[in-house]
Length: 67
Image (cartoon, rainbow, N blue to C red; front, side, top):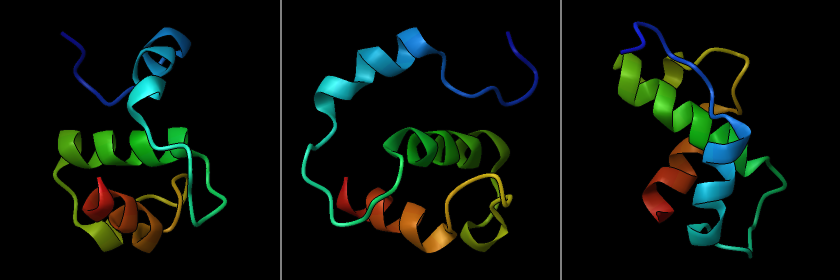
């Protein structure tokens, strides 16, 4: 088992892309959004405490609520 957070691999990303919506309001990388959501689940951090490497917390929260 992995002890720390690791971003999605290319094969994992290809496995989940068929279930993601194609039409989007915002021009963000959905892969970065999914990585941010996985980071939050792994670390238990608050929305506003997402590291700067991820998209803004409000955009991640938008997709979380929509999905």
